[in-house]
Image (cartoon, rainbow, N blue to C red; front, side, top):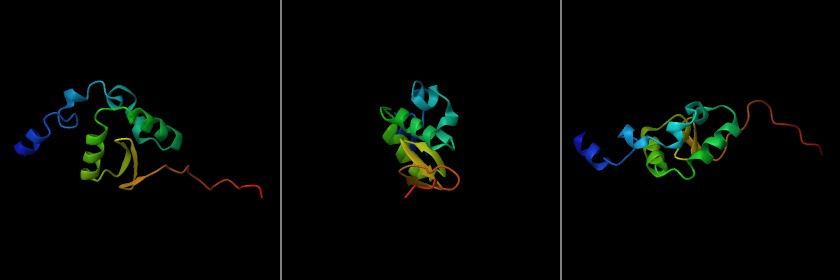
Length: 95
């Protein structure tokens, strides 16, 4: 365990004080676990320039996160998906 911490000593996911100022620490945390696709897209946009993005995504994959936005990607049932579809039936398209 100690070697794991030493390998990640500059990782904001291991040291919470390094996460200060990151979008997921300063904004609404519920946005990163929202149901609405447009909210999830806003969360992804907040991750775009985050310095912890790569570490966040790697850690989420390692932990097999079941849902939410991690490292700028949407996780749904433990799988990274490009976008989340809205709930309900798809709209009919006029022919």
